Length: 160
Ligand code: ADP
Image (cartoon, rainbow, N blue to C red; front, side):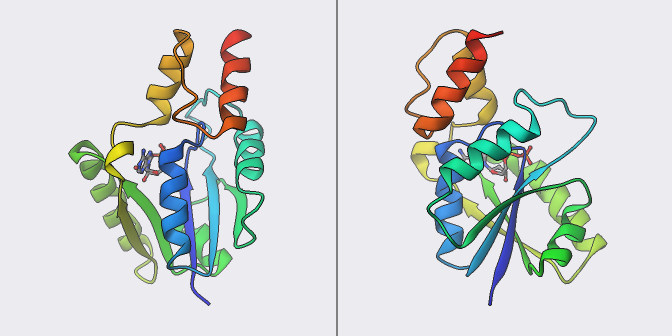
């Protein structure tokens, strides 16, 4: 059984993330979508809210498990029996960061490899940060997000 872990902030999950998830499921039997908990990084949504959205959006996919991680990604991968870390690449700007991360993870645990999916062209300009910014200014974010997430983001920006 091939198992992978897809770590990220998912603050919130977008259709760009969903595309990476769908494609990873073509390769792996089981995929852990993991919200990385970083105490020094303050999210827009709480970890619980992000988990709730991921669980709702991914509820019909039995091969996916949604969870959190407050350890090193490679430690969590080992613990879950995953052999690969899945990440997405958009523009060149992602590359530098992902390059450093991949090599650091490789040094930390050479058994765990990282697999990248190049974004769909249509999602190449899509990021959680851009979507939050558009929502803050009252723009239409529904085309970038699963409907449940779109609703939650509208609620959140309204209450701010
Ligand atoms: P992080 O804070 O770890 O970068 P994100 O939730 O922003 O977490 O992203 C998780 C992963 O998904 C990263 O590898 C990122 O490059 C990728 N990703 C984010 N948005 C997209 C997108 N629109 N298309 C493809 N990959 C994406």
